[in-house]
Amino acid sequence: MKSCSNTVSKTVPKNEWHPASWQSREALQQASYPDTAELDRVVADLSRLPPITTSWEIDDLKAHIASAQRGEAFVLQGGDCAETFDECTSENIVAKLKILLQMSLVMIYGLKKPVIRVGRMAGQYAKPRSANTETRDGVTLPSFRGDLINHRGFTADERIPDPQLILRAYERSALTLNFVRSLIDGGFADLHHPEYWDLDWVSHSPAAAEYHTIVSSISDSLDFLETVSGRQFHRTQRADIYASHEGLHLHYEQAQTRFLDRRERWYNLTTHFPWIGMRTAQLDGAHIEYFRGIANPVGVKIGPGMTTQWLQGIIAALNPNNELGRLTLIHRFGAKSVEEHLPDMIRAVKEVGSPVLWVCDPMHGNTETTSDGTKTRRFENIVAELESSFKVHAAMGSHLGGVHLELTGENVTECTGGARGLTDADLARAYKSTVDPRLNYEQAMEIAMRIAGLNTGQ
Image 1: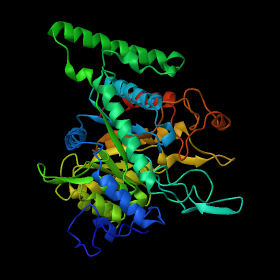
Image 2 (image 1 turned 30 degrees about the vertical axis):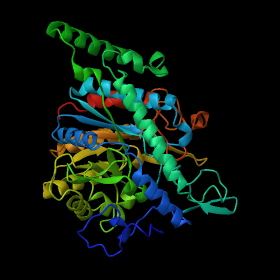
Image 3 (image 1 turned 120 degrees about the vertical axis):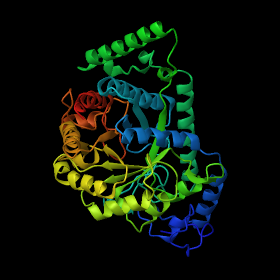
Image 4 (image 1 turned 180 degrees about the vertical axis):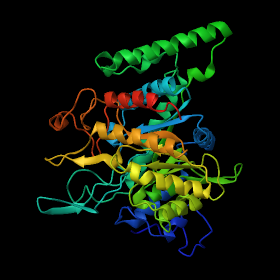
């Protein structure tokens, strides 16, 4: 890959970190821009634009993650597999907020602890691909890598990486997060009014009655406590939503990474919580190099193929000072493999004594393809991996403190199973994802209700 030529020397010492020091390392899953001068100009422009997030929001999330590491809270991370520019609309953003709020309400009720809401939103515009090219009818073109990089249309012009899309992704990310902030500040997330969050499913889902019972119980409890105390509880009137995305496109991440004198640290201000996919988690690679220098809480996906030595090397690189709230490990082994591989990972972390937050991603290890070539995930496999993960952590004396889901507030048919028993034949009815299959709002709520009852005894 060709990188910006005017931002960093290629002789950066190993221990000297700069937002562009990653360019001295091998960077996997990066787009090959034919016009590197234009890429340089875009990165320079983006570096001068206002940040999307703030350092105090990032530090607040880190403190919340630290509480989840101690077992005092639970993390719900969810959203689209890949955001698209076309779907950056108020309706879609509101639907995502509604499903996260509904799920968290159920989980708070069942787990009896705070739930930290982290959306896969406001920046999830780039995706890793298994191949650099795609072939259709004998024509081979670069793979579609997300709206931040190129276009999904299958023509040569559309598949050329375009630096201007980096700015478009920044703009839509900022619009999304600012709209979310406005909704929350306006009382949209007030626990006194969960009726604001109603989606169509509550009128016809088999789980509707149980959900309304939970809502009524929480509302009645709040009314009682506030009547007895004579005051309102401020924390129930605001439910913060934090943003996250895979920190894949390193020029984008670099451009909004800033040193804050008052905090004496570098922050990635494109998001609150960036994570590294396992495809780009090489110890000597560019992504680990970039992530080691930022103050944000960070995550790393771990799955089959991850060795204990590799994992311990990641921990040493990303959290050498054993900082609370700094590192989240998101495991994604698949329902058939989690009980075989997860115990070794837990033992490896215990050996180094580093504080981590364990989060289960039951989606990515359970992706399969139907007979007609459609990617899907079976609801029963998603549930099975979650159940096994809770059991393994409990047996190992560890703690599963969160879940990472690809989901949508829309009535899509991308994953089979669930209360409605969706089959392969149903997938074509409303399959909208451009990359990976997501849980629809009803399936996502079923997961939340199962989690609310899974964690007993931990």
